[in-house]
Length: 500
Image 1: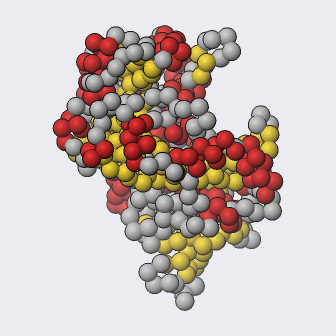
Image 2: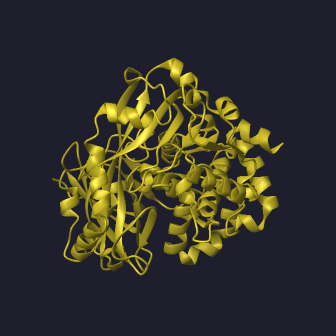
């Protein structure tokens, strides 16, 4: 057992989309800094970022109904929809910069144009969708959205969903051509190829066992080589924990006060994948419905065209499931070992508050294939069981923390950055819309952790991301310009057509 010790500037834990994005940003802003990456698995982007473990929706609130809510006065609250959309525009700008600078190639390997649609049934849902459409379509971020409640028009838009459908209640849909399908696994691998070509030291099959502060304020990270069994100690001035569901345990090991009183609740997902090429060919969109009452936001049903390895696929889901693992490749003891004296009451409170969610997850786990097929038939009325297989998707660990609004043990849906007061360490917790907002979230990490450098970096950030520091809604002309430039760089033909 060796105990070699080496120093570096930055350590990134986990080779997913978040570490890849932070590494790519730092390479542009501080090219001389030495960066090391440690990944437990044998390849980059194998856990939450993998294309089979997430929905690949370029989350921009074009179709996700849970990003808009109805206020008591009946008007539509668009706050979250606008925020998520603006964050995705930031991601597209950075990816475009990388393509235009020849740092990554062939963007069609990871992003393609694909219509985003919302589909609802029943009078109250149709009324909501129409109000949502009227509110969003006047907003320049949602330019080009269409609405119809005409079954003939719907047959044109979604033939697979309309054939054999009994239209015995109001139905409606919105459609926007400028949506995208993103293969985050492919993007993660491209980013790490770029980083490795630029002297980033990337170690696979290396597991981070513990972290502790050194006397000079740096972090000492104990890393085990899973192939040889040897351990080494690495020290760095800054550590980023981007280990997906594994981040909570590492944050707890760091001992920083900001990580206290936080817990995690794991939710797994199951998708149905179509294996009949004729059925796959009849659908070309991401179509999101409305979550059932009591369902968590990440269980919004959607029928998705996907492009994986440049091949068209069709997925439906996700059905929620429960496993105590925090990672797909994790341990059955992950949940129980995350309960510590400082978060015990937070976790107990969350359990008491979320009995309906627990019941819902148990019901989902117990569904038979035929019961899952019945849910699919709400989208494809004549779906045949033999055309569909089940695929286990990734684990998502939702953050549990004490909040002013929700009180003790509040379950958070979304992405959360936790950083030490001195900016020496940061961890990313949470789930959707994580990957789509990776660039915004990593810029937030840089702002929190490098307040001294950020002013000096700002001109360079604005070169890469022209909307940095600006609220896009206040600059409609910038929205149009960004759409055109990113569509051209990323080869998003449909978006360019809709803008011309």
